[in-house]
Image (cartoon, rainbow over all chains, first blue to last red):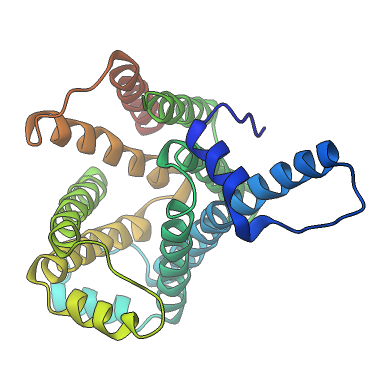
Length: 163
Length: 121
């Protein structure tokens, strides 16, 4: 999973002095290997947390909006819509979780190159699909699965098109 | 009213909001988050017209997203969020005059195909 063919990441991971755990007993080669793996996991952590929070946030938002029922911009006034949305407890909690996801994404971006963080976005599409099925009980068909698979492939292509 | 209207409006407002936020943050330059740099950073963000405008536009995008969520399944609406990469790429080429390579173009086309397939589901 962690192919280190990304020059930026390798450089970050091996030179970051905060990742020096200094366990003196191990041989140098083993120590370096372990440290590199730990470093990569540490660097991926904020991005993974961001993806997880994004999925949870969307689920909570969806729960709130489902409770409000189908809303229409033509049948309801903007002020009524805004008040209904802004006073729904699930929407408020979901929005905070989503904000947390954005925060971790920014922390992640400050540690790894964008081209490394980007493919993790694909995970959110797959996780949303799974959560929609298992938690929300939505019906999935083959077309929807195929569409999400194509999107993931497209995101990967965009990610690796970084020179 | 078609479900596509709030979904597409959400994507467009989201992307425009991001672009305006980016302009504001670029003009502000790198900010320090450490120690006593924090209040100054918050103040310069809160008083920046681009950042506030960008947040407002982004907020309108979130509003449309919630309208969409009230009317369709999450597994149906969520994949449409990937259209933002397509819009960002179009904006980069036609507004920012950036050059994109074949691989990125292929990726954007594949994402479009995926969204069309989900839309048909």
